[in-house]
Image 1 (spheres, rainbow, N blue to C red):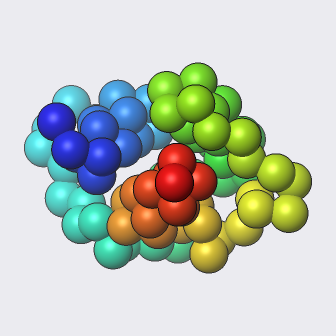
Image 2 (tube, rainbow, N blue to C red):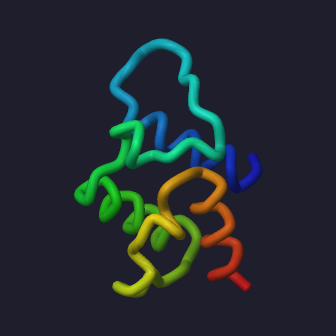
Length: 81
C-alpha cells in the first residue's frame, strides 16, 4: 500500500464516522470538512510518528503539513528523507 493510501485508510478508520464509502479526495481540506480538529491532529501526529518513525516538532503542527492527504504524505516523505 502506498503512503497516500495508508494515510487515507487511517483517516477513514479513525475520523470518518460513517459506514458507507468515503468521498474524500487527497487534496480535500480535512479541517474545512470537519474531519480533523485540534485533538484529531494530535492523534494523527502520534500515528505518523509511531508508524513512520518521524518526529513532528511543535512548529510543524499547522495546516501546511496536516490539512489534506496530499499535504500529510508530502510532509511524511520530507521528514523521512
